[in-house]
Image (tube, rainbow, N blue to C red; front, side):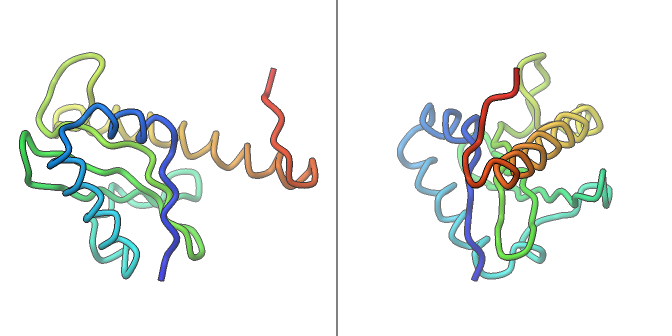
Length: 128
């Protein structure tokens, strides 16, 4: 059983959605608890030592969940519309390479935060 950690930007996006869509995405989170590596599609393999996965949800406009798996934890980095091609949205096949670069940045920030927390004895200090 995996623990699901949803990053702040994914939570904010989830809060903007309709309750029915939010419920479907939450069900997808629950399904990731059992075997997240088989439930999603690997996005291009390892980037900076982190493997990224994508899970599609076919409800409403269609959504994608981008996440990483490490130890017994699934970290949901981003949730977004499928098939939108605007500057502030990600999720289409045309923008997938750019999206992966953003995800690598998010994962690196997550790793740096965990390292700082470990060094500070369990307290994260904001980087200046």
